Amino acid sequence: MTKHRIYTMSFSGVYPHYITKAEKKGRTKSEVDEIIHWLTGYSQEELEEQLEKKTDIETFFAEAPHMNPSRNLIKGVICGVRVEDIEEPLMQEIRYLDKLIDELAKGKAMEKILRK
Image (cartoon, rainbow, N blue to C red):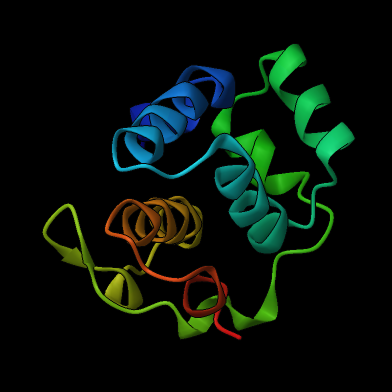
């Protein structure tokens, strides 16, 4: 089975799109970073390191210091698919992040986005 193309894309190539999506809706880069920290456990320094290294998405998630156990509370549809129904673990992690950024862009409060 061949790898999905998104797995080999560099995270630093996708990251600016997350920021642009958030900023278009009046949100900030620091909020995007906070979401990434919450989901993956990366510190700001570690995140910047991953971006500098142009780490691919598969490695970015594989090397995440601590995937948040509350991420299974993320529910809803992204790209026409329910995130909770995605069977492939890496794709589900990617879509969790997509969903959180989507919620940010839709104006949801950070406490709700971070499932507090």
